[in-house]
Amino acid sequence: MGRRVFIRCAACGHGEEFFLGVGTLFASLVVLQDYLPQNQREEIMALYRECAPDEAEFEERLFVCPSCHRLSGRLKVHLKPGGVTRFVSKFHCEDCGSQLIERTPLQIKKIPCSRCGAKNLKVEAGPSSR
Ligand SMILES: [Zn+2]
Ligand SMILES: [Zn+2]
Image 1 (cartoon, helix red, strand yellow):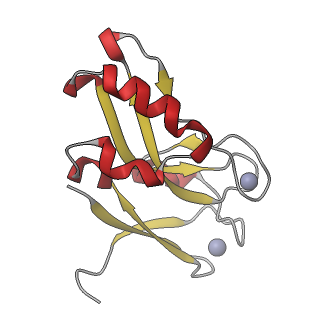
Image 2 (cartoon, rainbow, N blue to C red):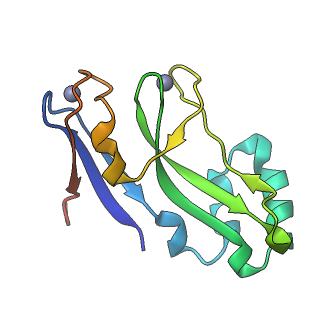
């Protein structure tokens, strides 16, 4: 199941919402094709067709930029047909181009706020309705 996570800076109030784990809602990567990077879509789908169901993982995960500390939710794809890793998604920061690092929401406490720089990010459960 997907879960909504709201990450807010306790210092400046800057907050962002992420909906993580969404991929697991879908039985097949085929329905998520549109979310794959266009230049990698063919490669990913070709490898995906070689994968047994337990050899393909795809899930919305939280990523952070090591330079400007911008957070982003990205669809991470990990394909290992025949048990061998052939594809793992890599992402780059839209602002500065650095390669993003995957983090769990529990690990974000050590990350400075992208707006004010304070290491005071808090994870809140998102609103159940809005
Ligand atoms: Zn960046
Ligand atoms: Zn802040």
